[in-house]
Image 1 (cartoon, rainbow, N blue to C red):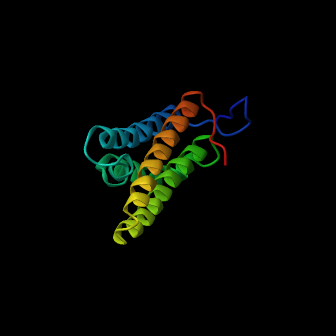
Image 2 (image 1 turned 45 degrees about the horizontal axis):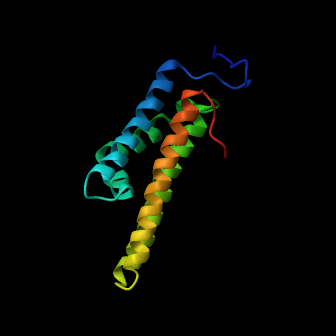
Length: 135
């Protein structure tokens, strides 16, 4: 029988699933910080770094196990962060190709990188407090 969280009335996830969610945030953060420390943009390191790719694969593989718990919102948050970042990188690439749009492309990549860092930080802090992510 599944445990129910007394505060929220939702399904209480197992400690192992909470740990996995922390690991997923750590993998995403590692990729993003690699972009800060290296020559790549945060967002390109986030999208192409093996830690983020592994994290998204884990998100999809474990998604059914977190349904009904507050972790479901974190998985949705992580997956959306990845795919929306990819979308903005593709938009930036379209600007880059035009040559005149290179300054816009650099701006889009920088803003998207900051957005990725924000989403990782906000999500991880809410996970530490055992709170769901907003829709």
